[in-house]
Length: 278
Image 1 (tube, rainbow, N blue to C red):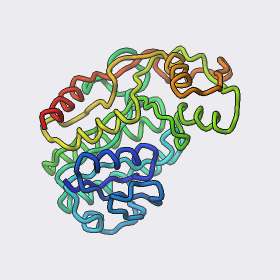
Image 2 (tube, rainbow, N blue to C red; image 1 turned 60 degrees about the horizontal axis):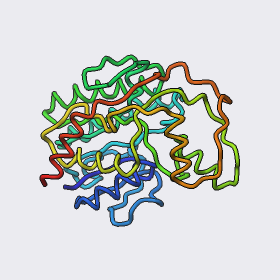
Image 3 (cartoon, one colour; image 1 turned 45 degrees about the vertical axis):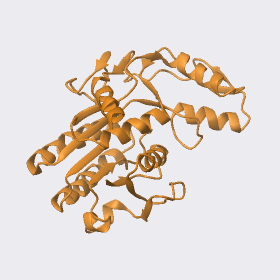
Image 4 (cartoon, one colour; image 1 turned 180 degrees about the vertical axis):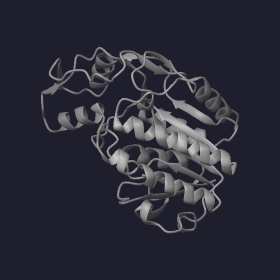
């Protein structure tokens, strides 16, 4: 398939583009800059919100995988609300011009404070501007896709573990601090239990989702089980032979973070089984 990936130069986009190419797809990658994107993709630098006829501009893709999003790790940045209508209008233009398959990266922060397993029917009550904006976009694009008979896959991401310094996750920050020679990393209490998934597995899941149309709607990209934050971070440090050590209790735990939350992996497991059959 010909797949347009927005936000291709981002931390997640780089690995997802590579995985899509490895899985045999023709990838059109777009972002404001594309310096770190796999050169096997067709590279089109652009501000997607400023393109007049995006479907034609991006070579009439079979699938739009919309990853683009500013300040994803700054949960109360005003840009989440400012950009919301632009995301919707971009997707609307694509669909009205002929797009038949849409996949968008969502987030577990759409749910808000919750304890337990999250599935596609779990009510949403987001507690940050990031979660509010993603939740609003999800509801809007589902209406749009239903009206236009377009396949819609909302891929809800959880906590992704990777050892690159180019990112804003705690794992990227620890990697950067280690490479800068720091011996201590200020940390929270680390008692929260969340759903962690390795970067490579996450990219494989995303690629597998868009490679099929049998399973749609909200799909959790996750491991399916919770792990204590401190345990996962300590294991990350050990696995990478880092010398840095955590300094517990420097930062307070965020009030809106769930104490124990994980994704229901029923749908993603079925999708991965389909991939094995291919």
